Length: 138
Image 1 (cartoon, one colour):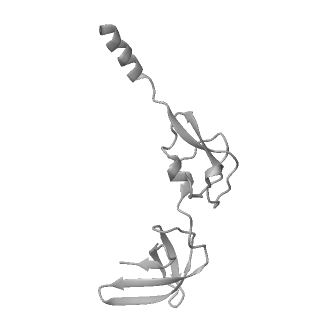
Image 2 (cartoon, rainbow, N blue to C red):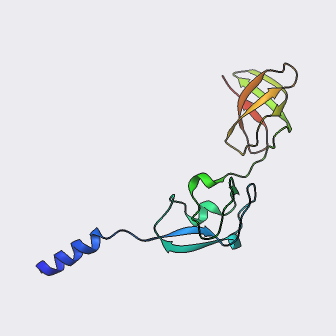
Image 3 (cartoon, rainbow, N blue to C red):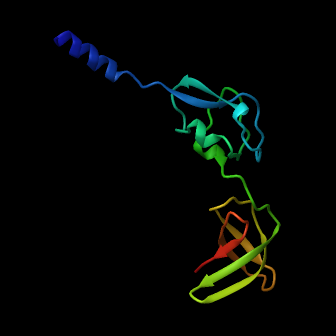
């Protein structure tokens, strides 16, 4: 009984092995990752990214075969491109102000982006919606 406890304690002390997600080809920045672009490999987890978190995301940096994909390497696909003219909306209570702005960076839904108001030339920061509208708040 005591030997079984010692063996169990030794097994528990071993480093955990898990699958990690790696690209099977070079994936360029701003490419959408498809299921056939990645593979699960046994090895120490790097960055804690699961397969379902990678597929359908956009690569922020170049991803190379043999190197694990980390959380910071991927993002939600952008719906707004840099220099794109986008609808800009400010809503507070019953007040609603809408105008157009020029995006100063690429961004996906839920991300914050700086936008230049085309009528006032002021730079504001707003959150991107799924439809590509920028919502500005205080």
